[in-house]
Image (cartoon, rainbow, N blue to C red):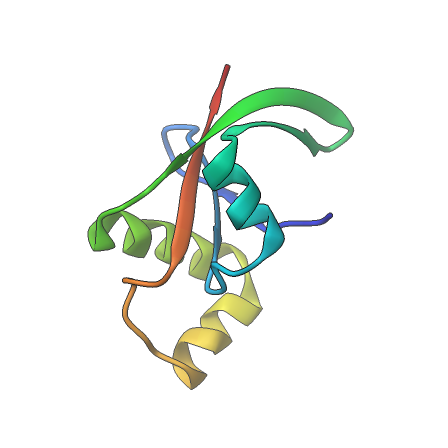
Length: 92
């Protein structure tokens, strides 16, 4: 499955979605230990849920900088971050 991701200036890796009903979100909430493959390299990581709206907004801002469709989505459907699902991916 392809999932959008973003790095911040400190090298922290994040994934997020506006639809927390997606299977991958429910799966990482039950078992945060997962494998990810980026640019052909597969790693074991732990998905840490971000709970605070300020953390979720931070990740949303990273997405808006990286993805045109994320910027457009913000213009067309501005919404709060309470239902936004965001995770920091940390090496195990």
